[in-house]
Length: 79
Image (tube, rainbow, N blue to C red; front, top):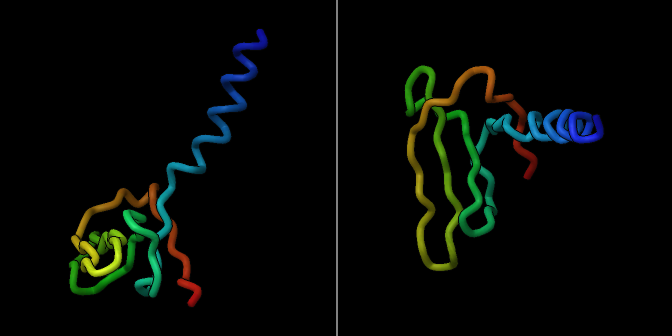
């Protein structure tokens, strides 16, 4: 019974972590290999821009990707 209760507690804590946050603007600073999803009209309908942080001297990687609507939440970026 304890194992079942612990399993339910861990799964309830893990599900909110699966949601991705979609920012309205690209953040100025990203840690190396950190990923941010940005709402960008150049990517087209139903797609967002995936920005990956990089080490100093190397440009960020940017690509348009599709996210499921139930996976993403829209928030504003804080400078």
